[in-house]
Length: 299
Ligand code: AMP
Ligand code: MN
Ligand code: MN
Ligand code: MN
Image (tube, rainbow, N blue to C red; front, side, top):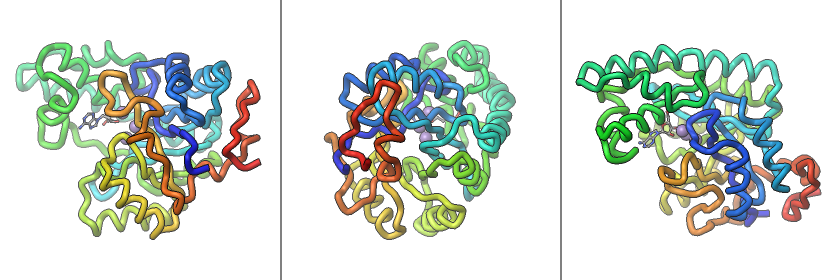
């Protein structure tokens, strides 16, 4: 149960990943993933193809999403797992979150034009397979291709983060709304990569307690964004708050991402003291069309 190679955080071409569903499913299978979730940003359209591709690979699959939220003036990501992608409340909710992206992208282009970088909006759009989901990652890829910066780390630091020319302040979903939509769709809400946020301890405590008060249940302990110290810290936080623990690579692209799909830190399993989020789902629920045996899961 604890040593299941679950990768419950990844992105496809439906958001800011560069691989499509069949390529991701094949990669997950090749890397030994035993339970896979696709969690595109504010977007559900990739899920049917991902489930079909997982079925074709005989890979157990969970429908997921990563919702952008603004909490205490900071962008926080909430992953929803085992959601029903057809749920009206969820669909309507994330439509409102996505709606602001187009204008924001134009403003990002304007900001970059002011420092002499031309046509960044057009360039980013061309790199975004889903026109409804233009993200900073697409701008990053355009700026790297234009030779303005050497890699994603540099491009975000110089151009795409707070105070930088391509950064546009944006109001995403409210924490309580994101959790409510996920729960309405029958899913489990999980705080994504908590080690990435620049909160004070008080703000972080507020995030965890408000999240729980709204019905949020889980936290990512092992993720592509966490170093060894973060894994220890969020293991303790999960225990302190009595939260379910999740693990996921946050894979976007073979060249860009710190971790490959399914190849998490030292193939690190969750601490046996934790309750894995997948303990919520029975093997029967997770079995795909081609009847995979997920031996490590409850019957
Ligand atoms: P957006 O939702 O448009 O603000 O884009 C957020 C995405 O940008 C994240 O999901 C990551 O894929 C990527 N991202 C954010 N910060 C960084 C960073 N410092 N380095 C590389 N990628 C980042
Ligand atoms: Mn992303
Ligand atoms: Mn994220
Ligand atoms: Mn992500």
